[in-house]
Image (cartoon, rainbow, N blue to C red; front, top):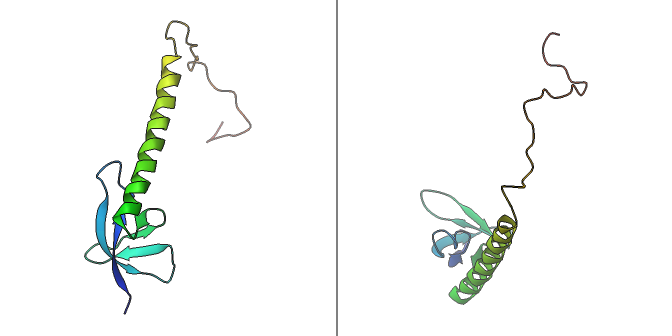
Length: 103
């Protein structure tokens, strides 16, 4: 029978936290599968053998997400509605050689 173990899943760390799961090892060293009603598999780096590793990974995920949001915020702060270009979508598109239906 497959070897069972407890792992810490960080896949959902930014939404619902770190999950402690009972899993079985698979023939692939970087993959584990859950046991129970719903079969789910996790791949590295979404699961960890220790809580310390999982918390370290979650810290990295948080740092990357903050950087991403900061970049988006900086871009949004640079926008100006008064000078923003307006794209005219009311004109029909040019036929690029594609025909749909009878002409």
